[in-house]
Amino acid sequence: MKKIILSFLAIVMVVSFSNKVMAQSSTDVTENTAAGAVLITAMGITETAPMHFGSNVLTDALGGTVVLPSNSTTRGYTGGVVTSAATPVATNAAYTVTGTGLETYSVTLPATTTVTHTTVATGVYTMDITLMKARFNGAGADAITSTLAADGTDSFTLGGTLTVKANQVGGIYAGTFDVTIDYN
Image (tube, one colour):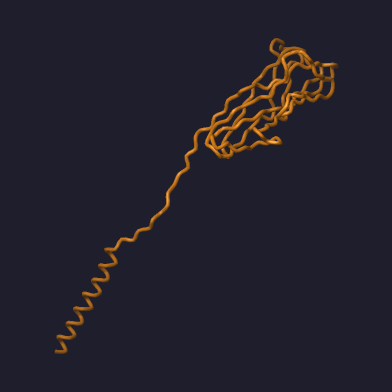
């Protein structure tokens, strides 16, 4: 009888142990994991007006500067350069921007842009535009970052400083520069 009871207990222990091992190996453990993505639309920029410092008068051979504010065409002058009533008038460069609504972005402006006399290639026939500044739609101060509206639009204007060198050749000057925008 003792052998039967011991055998029975041994069988019960083996079966119990086997069931527990089988129960653990056959039970799947699942973790619910979050997933996501952000999809932003490509940014776009369109020039709606070019930067132009307008007509200016060189009053002496020493040169000077013409300062075009970012949000106004009322120019400031230093040295031997003054305003002129002749056309063309000054204009701020202006741009519209598109992208994903409520995203922030920044604008990168060149440190220096050179404009060159359109017909003369001797003497002092280039001028530099420096200190470019951007003013975003509705902003009270110059900045390099802005936030797109909920509909994904924004706009800004530019100004800068034109340096007129000593003995600058009179005439028409032209050039181009790059304005880069990108999400922050």
